[in-house]
Length: 229
Image (cartoon, rainbow, N blue to C red; front, top):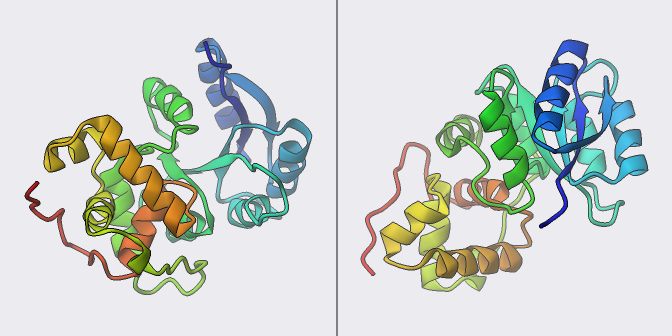
């Protein structure tokens, strides 16, 4: 049995930190540190080397966006995945965090079951929670967010099938939905996704969604295309 995820919770509200910590601990997840601002969470990440950070964006001093950028800047070997905590599903700063390397986001009113599932999925790189909401967020801000870190990539390195899979990823499809659409096994789909991430030098599917929009592979408002096997 694999070790439980090691998690740091960063939020300026003590009640949020305590509530999330109790929920995760009750399910056997190891909360290794809590932080009230960006500087504290950066220090906690260096001290505890967690698998995952639950990161509030709006914190005093160094905010969650800057903390995300610093943690994922490349200075730290094997940095943790970062999931953004927000009150608003269309918060422009969440999109900026996704382009900076965050793996996804959670609304703070998430159910306990959804929170636990999200944390346990975080290390797999699979669809991290509410892909339709993530897609809506990207559609709203991809054209005009000048603060985001650009993720433009050369898609010519992908095969035609990999381009089809990336386009469907951009539409928010899970591995199971991709398998049904392309009439493939989930194992084969995971292989395609892994190759796409490796070729484009992306951390996970959240960045793949951003790339699909920023390169024009999929345009805002477009659904997943019908695909023949």
